[in-house]
Length: 61
Image (tube, rainbow, N blue to C red):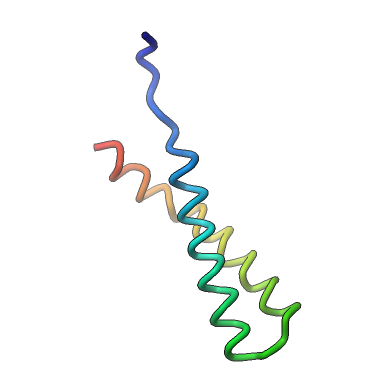
């Protein structure tokens, strides 16, 4: 058995996906512009991926 620490990459991707979906839905509901909503969803997903480090650290405890 290896004693390496898990990376929690799947958890981080799920957090980013959830944040991106919420960002997309809010941007679409406010602006009714599909392209802007896609860009907003991608930006929020990227922020969610970076911020999910805290969630992954909590899961590792």
